[in-house]
Length: 398
Ligand code: NAD
Ligand code: MG
Image (cartoon, rainbow, N blue to C red):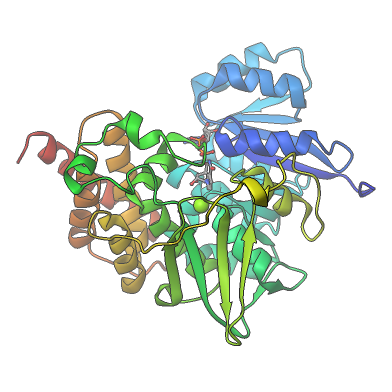
């Protein structure tokens, strides 16, 4: 039976891949959930369709011209259109919202994610970049306000499912020896180093198992995604990155594992479909239908496991170095990576230059203690500035 109290959900990044999967799960449970806020950046036509379908109280567009066009299109509806970063944070914090799906891509999602944590909302965290940039601030905010953080990244959701946790979703690490993140290895898993260096955006985006946004697809191909996830896991589960193992598992059926002191290893399995972790986060601590195909063990074939190669995929090594360095090193590599990925997608640099730009930026921007959000944002700005210059230098072949 559906729960009698309906929860109001804000879907940030509504027009993206996670946004679409979230709205799909929500639409399966109209008595349990209602969509109150939809937020996106520039995709006006897509937002018009989503607003007609879900009839949210508020629609937010980060881009102000897009907001104007959306407002015109929705003039005769009940949906109020807004723009501005402060306005998005106010929406997230309003009493009209119970649950926030943080699924904006990249550093652009940081402030709204932090706002949800500060306001004690149930925070469904897909935007891993916010934990990578400001893990201490975000975790402290949730602890102070009582916000429950439900990891949506499939690996972290799997680990969370394999751990005991309290009624505020704080995991219990007693008896845990290590956590094991699985990685698909991405589309270049079997490629030679020089072919990887020259890979095209179309090749990088063609992920073997998951269908995702462009940025995270490129990150999966470079293994930076696993690096960011390592840092994300160390914050979520309060564990040093050195205690977090990474193992390549090309089938993406075992979503991650927890190794206990007594020799037990618990794993969470499922088809690679983000609606599973999203439904788990939405309904936690209950379970609801996600529309996901049941896992068929008889047609699954062999599950393989191999080590990750940080020589061909240096981004994973760089993320480990940033995690070990602490301070704002993770924010620095995140910013450099965003700049480099954008330049790669625009065909301004080669794929193999992404780790070089990240490495140069990490070595050049002075690390600081992330004592406030302003420090984090300033470090993000400095790293972007350095990485942009590095992109130009590489374009000129210097
Ligand atoms: P996507 O590119 O498909 O969608 C991104 C969304 O963010 C869009 O709705 C876009 O409008 C919005 N957006 C972009 N820039 C914005 C800005 N400046 N202000 C406001 N909104 C903005 O990305 P995605 O694949 O859905 O990923 C979203 C987040 O979830 C990322 O942080 C990613 O790492 C994480 N994640 C995604 C998956 C997946 O399967 N797609 C899995 C795990 C984690
Ligand atoms: Mg993941």
